[in-house]
Length: 212
Length: 179
Image (cartoon, rainbow over all chains, first blue to last red; front, side, top):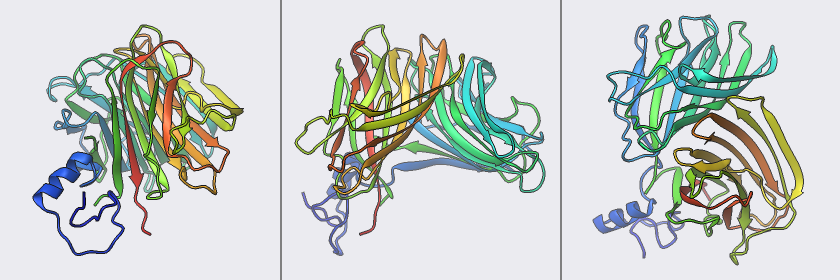
């Protein structure tokens, strides 16, 4: 089938033309996954002041089974602080503080390579070891899986890079699981197991990873 | 149009031990992002999900030209490395599948699969849960198929022979190139 803007070789546009999509074209291409972005920005939030948490209460969970969450310019009130994620099963009225497990590898420019693991974490880990001095910031991402699936565990994999309290480069890579099979419909981004505050100017973006 | 384009979505709805998704790699893209999510076993026994490539004749490439290395990071035990060369598969490229509610999720990048002048490389990150989330395992892995053959798809399969899976989804995205 030829489309007004794409020619016959979907999904790439391989010929120049000035055609436009008809309604039928758009509907057909969208059903194939060939139209529109493959990451939908569900919500972006920037911290203002020093909040104790940033909450996302609209996950579009019925639409996506994989989410992508990014953080830029992070720091907390704690030196070498962490940023984590807690999950909610009641739309954000409360957030779970137990039943998390984590494993990650940490690579520090001033401290070698280390393992961290826990079967009793109080959050999913997101950003690790960010200092509090100017420019000691963290940046990273996690994929979140199966949040809306009541029959499966929700888990994450991610990676982040930061400058720690010694202004040395620090990286972590790994994942966390919330070991309760239930529907998750909100998430909260918190500092250090809900201790302290997030700093001003952190940008969090939550995306849905496109599916048909 | 997006710079990340969904090429194929394959959903597993019946019990099977091997799943091929072909005609996803082409000259349209150099880099592919494959999201493999939510494989679960039909029975109680967990199994490794490994990967091989497929050519345009729909033949699964089982020759001994796969090299891989990975780090497994368990929440309840010491981390472990795995590596090997000249193998018939990319071992545990998609982690492992357990019985529901155990599950897994992966993001695997594949580089230059369609090229007939370069090897096919991959790197991935995964999380799998085990034994009713008694523990979880995070992985990072790399792999290469050391042939310059053009490959057009992937085959995911139960490489332990431990039992079939009956759910899961495989989504393949292409990263836009301007030509």
